[in-house]
Image (cartoon, rainbow, N blue to C red; front, top):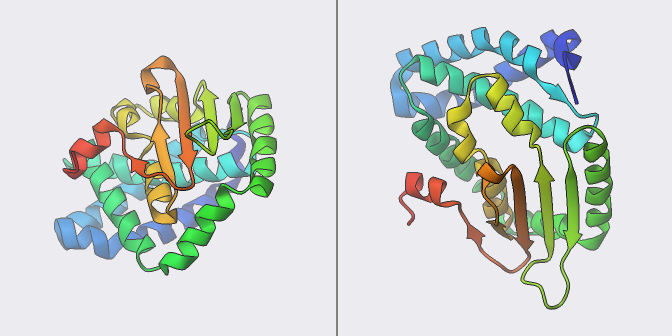
Length: 227
C-alpha cells in the first residue's frame, strides 16, 4: 500500500467527483434545499485535493475501486460536516440514496448479480484478489463454506486499509458505520450478509449466504429505525 499514487491523476479524479456530485444534487436538494446543497458541492470540491493526497493504492483493481468510491463519499462527508450535518445524517442519506438507485434496476438483474458474486467461478477470482491485496498490506482471506456451515463464503480482513484511510483524514467518527456500503450492496443483490466481528478488534469478518438475510450492524440499524 502506498500514498501519492493518484496525484498524477488529479484532473481525472476531480472530473469523476463532479459527476458523482451531479448525480446526487437533486437528492441533496430534496433534503437540505438548494442553497445548502450548492455550498456542500462547492466545499466537497475544495476538500478533494487533500483526500487525493491520502488515497491508498493497493494495486488490486477491486479494492482500489472501493477506495475511489470512498474518496468521493469522504469529500461529500467533509462538506456536510462543514454545513453542520453530522455523520449519522450522512450515513442515512447514503443508504437511502443507494436503495433508491438499486430499486430502479429490475430485481431479477440484481439477483443474478448476487448469484454470480457468490458463485464458485467468481470465488476463484476473489481469492486471487485476496492474495494480491494481502501482498499490498491489507491482509485478506476468502473462505469457502462447507455443507455444515451457515455461510457460503466468508471474507476476513485485518489491518483495514479503509479504516486507515478514514483515520488519515480525521474522519474517525465514520468508522463505526463504515461497513454500510457492503450492506447496501448485499441488500440490493439479494444475498445474506452478517458482520461477525467487531471493528474494534482490528479484524473484519463478513459472512455471506446465498439464501440468508442481510443482518445490518446494530450501529446502522439504530440510524435507520429498523431495530
